[in-house]
Each structure stands twice: as C-alpha cells, then as structure tokens.
Amino acid sequence: MDMSRGKTNYVLGGLTDKGLIEPKKLKNHPDHIRWRYILTPKGMKEKIVITKNYLNKRLKEFDVIEREIAKLRKEIAVDGGDDAS
Image (tube, rainbow, N blue to C red):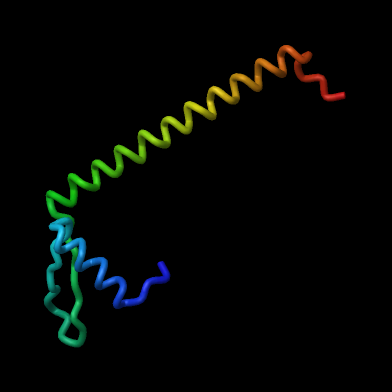
C-alpha cells in the first residue's frame, strides 16, 4: 500500500477515534506487540453504506454500457449487418 508505519498508525488512530474500529492487543506474543483491529457496529454500518453506494454506482455504469451496446447493435443492423468486406 506504500504507507509508512507512522502513516498507518495515524490512519488507524483516526478510525479508532471515530469509533469505526476497536484495537485489541493480542496476547501470546512476548517478543512483539501485535494488534487486532475489530470493526465496531458503527464501523459495520459505515461499511454497508460505502458498499451500497459503490454497488449503485457500478450498476448505473453497467446500465450505461448495456445501452451503448444495444445502440451499437442497432447501428450495425441498419448498416447491413455483419458484412466484413
């Protein structure tokens, strides 16, 4: 992702401050401090909104492409079909 550790920690801290994730310190790692980040209910709701918006955008794009294909097929039919010469 081309992000430094400091930038990553800054972003994770912001998500934690917003209540979207909850950091949990993992046990059984005496040599290293390891963290698990849990998506909170608030974070899950936000993720659902983002996903719905993305899905709606993609569906609209698909509809535009589908209409363009239908238009091109009509143009081909009017111009004489599949004449490759």
